[in-house]
Amino acid sequence: MHTSQFTSQFHAATPGEGGPRPAAVIAGLGTCLPTAEFDNDALAAHLDTDDEWIRTRTGIAARRRAAPTTSLRDLAHRAAANALDSAGQGTVGALILATTTPDRPVPAAAPEIAHRLGLGGIPAFDLSAVCSGFLYAAAVAAGLITGGITDSVLVVAAETYSRIVDPGDRSTAVLFGDGAGAVVLRRGSPGEPGALLAFDLGSDGAGADLIHVPGARERPDGPRWFAMSGRKVYLRAVEQMTVSALRVIKDCAWDPDEVDALVPHQANARIIQAVADRIGMPPERAVCALSRVGNTAAASIPLALAQALADGRLKPGARTVLTAFGGGLTWASTALVWPQLTTVDSEI
Ligand code: UT7
Image 1 (cartoon, rainbow, N blue to C red):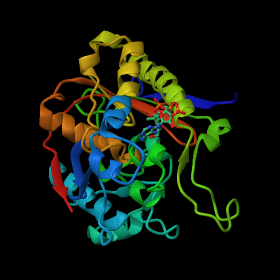
Image 2 (cartoon, rainbow, N blue to C red):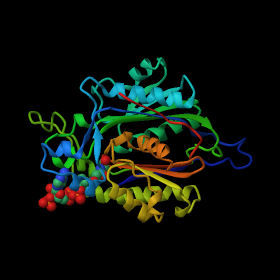
Image 3 (cartoon, protein in one colour):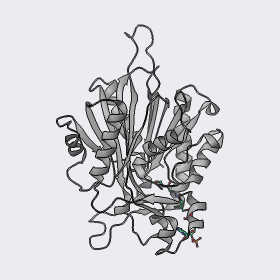
Image 4 (cartoon, rainbow, N blue to C red):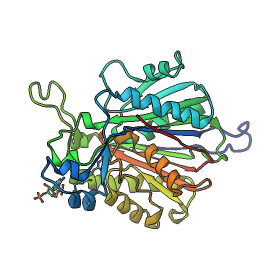
């Protein structure tokens, strides 16, 4: 098995380097969910499944679906505007949209979202890393900020998996939901709450077929629905998020039991508990926030952060680790001390 892997860490400067190095700091958090909620019984009415199976195997009780009149760009725009409100700022230097369910393949949606926000002219592009998309986008944004290219970046993650999942396939239809989340990252210092202290990113293209949507050449006539080898992905997700999260914990010189909050990609409650167990931290410190929204792919971590804040599970000063795993295969982690901020959430 070939994996590409790198780790990086933002360190305070050593003497003689000319002052402390900058860091990317979370300054605002916003979300947007579709209003329409479908509980397990609603799906069981037309699928060979039941509430008991879905709850015990996944922890999911309901998921949201965008109305036909709501575009991915609408969800992303609202989450982005909410993040700017949360940060108390009207502008940013760049915008990155993490998504694998764009409304149209061309062009990227990020420039239109920037335009709708009145930020036309800033660099804006889409990034595709499936369920790791939010953390990949945060890492790219941190690079733009610490490399001196811009002072602040709006990182948006939005998905409409209800539009690529086969509604007649019980193995995937019960899992996914639609939604969007966004953060504002600004230039600051590593000693500040909210500073992204370390990153670990990786991929394994040998597993590309485990999560995929066939292309037009692969399946010229047939339906092109999302497909996932659930059990194989489950095992890799537990293994890889554990390794990746432990890397950033080590980079921060923390002990696993000093981590106050683990906020993993929200695919399955059993995966989340297994990762916390393997990392060696108390299970109640792992944030599981998928019960009412399901798996929202790239959007799952910012949505889980907002839910954890609302529930009081995430508090300022908490040593927090974010970790994700998804199609590609890809994985990513980062770590921060949670800052004082108020999330702005809305529905559409
Ligand atoms: O977001 C990107 C990353 N994604 C993930 O991390 C998802 C990882 N995978 C999973 O979360 C789990 O593998 C699933 C939730 C997808 C499936 O749970 P599982 O415990 O791994 O079940 P399984 O795939 O091994 O299937 C067990 C049985 C099968 O029946 P047989 O072959 O044993 O007779 C399935 O056909 O459960 C059946 N099954 C269902 N039964 C009722 C699968 N889906 C359903 C369903 N309702 N919705």
